[in-house]
Length: 387
Image (tube, one colour):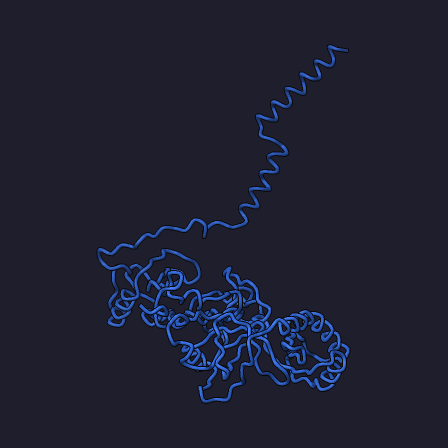
């Protein structure tokens, strides 16, 4: 058997070569990394830089590259340092996201990074934070209505990209001149939105996971409040907004499924007529296809839960002038489901118990207080006898 077809560490090389370090945002698993002749399929390589900055370069020198290799790539001026995140056939699929073709013009990969290149790269990255703080003060002195959110130095330290946020158009020509004089480098300004800034800064969302914009999201689609309405989510701005102060991107993840499921439910404004009375819409479970009706429009009174099919059947009966005896069909019983006790309880109950426990420890239980009083009396009596 040929050696290149043998398994490497028990996983055919796919896990070892395709995974790499997963600490970088927008990291993609290369499922074809261990497939023979995968790297020779195309000479285009995906290279990732700081945070959410990616680029595609042509390996014209046929350098053997794998995921995780640090390379020096062509830049204007000089060169930049990046990490190879994908090679082979999957790169062509990634190009479709950026609307590029293999025939497009790509910059070249010069070489694998040398120790001298890494020293310059480390020196340039060490200056980014101080440069950002200083540039913010310069923009403030020039009375510019903008916020510089991040600074990214090129690998050789000859150029820096300043990412800024501004609500209106900003004339930063004077700012570029001042920054070039102060830092002695070539300046490039890039405007980003609030979502892009959150992706560059990173953080943990209310779901407990890392922000989507800092991990895998590259194209930001507009999110509207209608997505929350379709999913029956409370229109609370504090709960719907993310760390970027915009509507959460995850509101669009399941909205299509909710829209499709809601088509099997009747309109909420339709009232159901029965021999017992009139029932009004109270709430619904879209995914289960169930609707809960109440005899009162504002408060839950005599609530009954039925399926969407049963609701449509009653609507058709009302159109014919017929009224069923009840909302539920003959022989149909309402399914009782288990109640989530944690959902019903308030999370602050633990704090209340601790406060109450402290009070009880301070005052003690009634039997303890009685015992303490008896000991105090005995101690007083013994002291009087001794006197």
